[in-house]
Length: 205
Image (cartoon, rainbow, N blue to C red):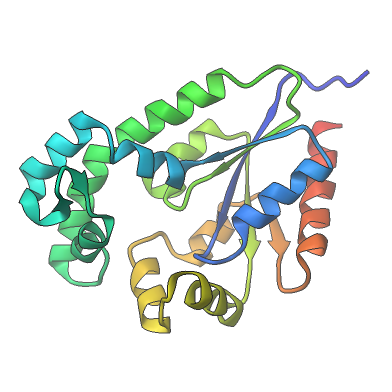
């Protein structure tokens, strides 16, 4: 019988389009896994009335499409290298990050005892301080050209847009530096999943 005391909570980091979600999903072939997508939680949080009221008070009607948040308009205000972008991003984070954390903590509290691994996928994990919810941090290392191809196909982003979005996040070097393990995702997805699975095996054995 395993001597593991509790479910291993892994925070997964990487650049935009690095394949973090795909690698995380692949773990289900190796372990009893639950994935928590903080970005999806963030989208849900934008629908909360209290959050919408705060955003309307802070940014006005320009970030709304009727009664709902227009995420494209909001993104134009907060993503970029100009001072006003950075100031707007700070205001946004002060509103949404505490609520996202509450939702993530609630999900973690409900994890069944038989789950071996929980993967927390959060693009702004370090900025928000959510890494303290994790037992370990891993970094998915993927070449820029590969990431650009993915976001161009999936989101229609140019190289400039990808760089603009990433400029608002902690650098990839810093994300790599704080990680206990680095997954080389320059090859096949299957190979990347195998690397991470082998690391987890060592941690929970």
